[in-house]
Amino acid sequence: MPAADSLEAAIAVVTAEPRLHARWLNTFSYLEYVGFRKIVKSQRAETVDSELLTHALEEGRHALGLKKLAVKLGGEEFEAYAPELLLCGDEAEAYFQNLDAGCDALFAHLPDAQRAKVVYCYVTWLIERRALDVYGRYKVALGTSPLASRIAGLLMEEEKHLADINREIAKADPEFQTRAPELEALEKRLYETFLGQLSAELQASRPRASA
Ligand SMILES: [Fe+2]
Ligand SMILES: [Fe+2]
Image (cartoon, rainbow, N blue to C red; front, side, top):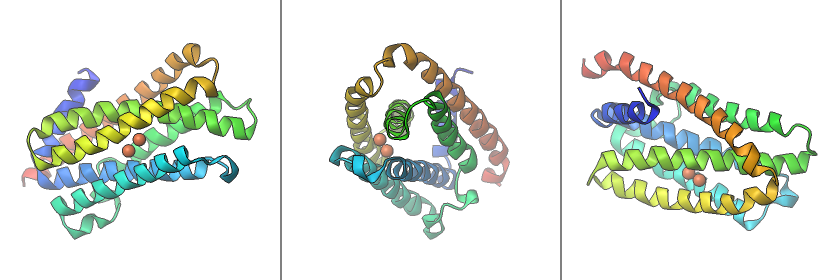
């Protein structure tokens, strides 16, 4: 099944069952939190500017907003990021960490400060594009639900992050045009691995969800 179809099938299963839906929201909250943490930790303080701070804080706000939605839908226990309150939480984090490590390995020859900047640019560029695709399909599936307008707000900020990084990335790496396809392929592989794991988990959850 093409990745877009697998994602849409997963969204249909998740949104039909409140607890699965709360776990889905909590998982995206967790990924936003990991993104926030990575942005903050990846740069040396002397290079942090207002754009980077804004990006980090907006990802932190996305984590909080999605967390509140998970709690609203699933109850107080969703305050935590415990594994049973996520959907493939370890696998989702592995997607993120492996992407970061893959980008980092490609620029291992650069001095630390320059590598930190270029890796931040590539990871952000790849993740924002994926976030727009996933959140975009999720929003469409939500239809006229009040949740859809919350996701629309989040999408607007992710679009701005992508526009910002599109301006930065060519400056950070003069070889961006020739290097981009290799990193896009890496991200696509990691995403499809995660999607396969998510689909398998949802398949396994089904009998329990309807019990
Ligand atoms: Fe975000
Ligand atoms: Fe973002």
